[in-house]
Length: 273
Image (cartoon, rainbow, N blue to C red; front, side, top):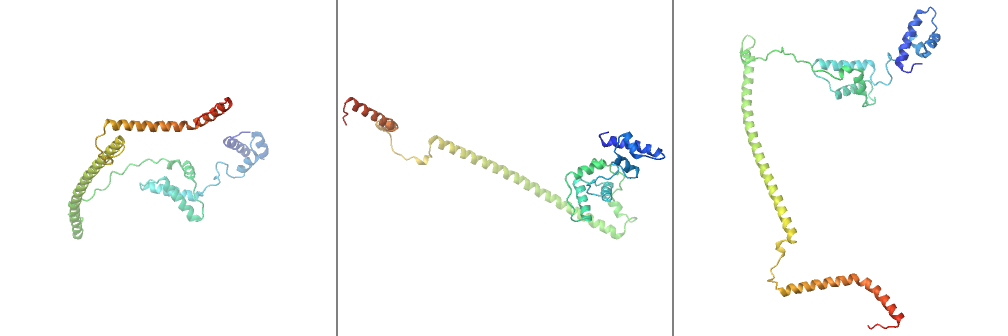
């Protein structure tokens, strides 16, 4: 038996041709001969659509709604307004809402399947513009009495004067904007320079504090230090160092003294305090 639906449909087409040539068609016999499912052969023989001709189940839009959506896309394309993908989804959602306000939203894969069914909407080439457009009327043609009434001529003259006034105002505003832009650039440059100087000053202060430990305002004048004072300061520092070493050795010294006393008692010796 064939495995794919395409192979089965091809065999069904051959079986239908064979059945139409028989005076007394026997569906089950032909199905056994060509090794096709009986029900799959019986349905198209009775006039039902085949698997590939039937509308698939689970589509959001029915054929009429999908045809309306395609017509809307073609109409916008004829006007030179190509439709984006988000607009296609929005239009399909609005069609569903008109039919049923409580319809579920479209899934993310709906647009992909829609474009697979209609590949012509997937890539739309840009159409060339019509170069034979009518020319815009000039000032002379607007003042011509052959095609214009006096009111129309006055109206065009008023519009022309307004446009000239607006052109002068626009040039004035352009100069103001240029000046403001130039001033803003200079202010930004000065602000950047000030920020750089502040950062340099902070870095110098931090380096000086790291070098001397404290700021210069922390020192007080105490006169000249002699060599005797320096020697005394060294002796005091050495004493502190010795005391710290003794304190570190004190726990070990206690253990040694206990062992020494026990040894003296065992040997009969006495320690002087």
